[in-house]
Image (cartoon, rainbow, N blue to C red):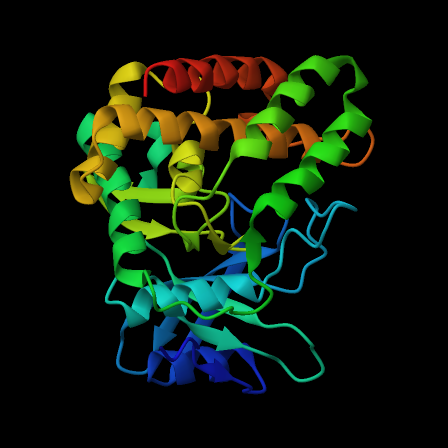
Length: 314
């Protein structure tokens, strides 16, 4: 698999975007993108000589990353174009056009087409959530066995999860009992598969139009690991049962997993997601986005109960 997006080193934005679009740019306007997060993101309107008008998004892959922590370089902009190239190479839709590296810069701008739609979190249509679960399963199916290590991909193995446990013990000394139980689960845990993992697949990062997934964004935490981790992110939090069931059902319809196996594996993966947040959301270093500001220790307790139920009734 040739995992690379085309990169232009043109001198100006107009020249760079013209090269990626295959035309001559005669007009360009730029404004801050309204949903920017830790990276700088600009919304750009481009007019070409042939009259074509293009709505683009430029994302700075070399920004400081407000969500970095001392635990690791969790965010790495180089992973994002790699992930879009993977999707392209296995025949899945991606809005990525390519990369632009201006002279004197060590990092690229990622150039994406603006995709119509809304974040999955804003729809209560079960079909959209089912299609999101199905999209995830299809990505895993198509990329299985053909991934290289990519640019500093995160390996979500036991060592990775235990690094969050160590941080969680430091940040949450009053949750020692919960963390001890999580460690017991980790002692028995074995990853189910070694698949492409988005790592931050919360509903805000999936764009849907109608019931179809049109784009998945923010791949800075891409890596490899257990196949249930992304589904655990997708259905995390206080999601209505109908939407959770739709997402899980859409996933298992593709994978063929029966309900008991899915619920057991998903409970363990959700516990690991809770652990990461407990180790990441430091009282002094960083606060999570509003949508992820939860009582993750309480969520971990619920996941622990689900894990125990699955172990008693496999």
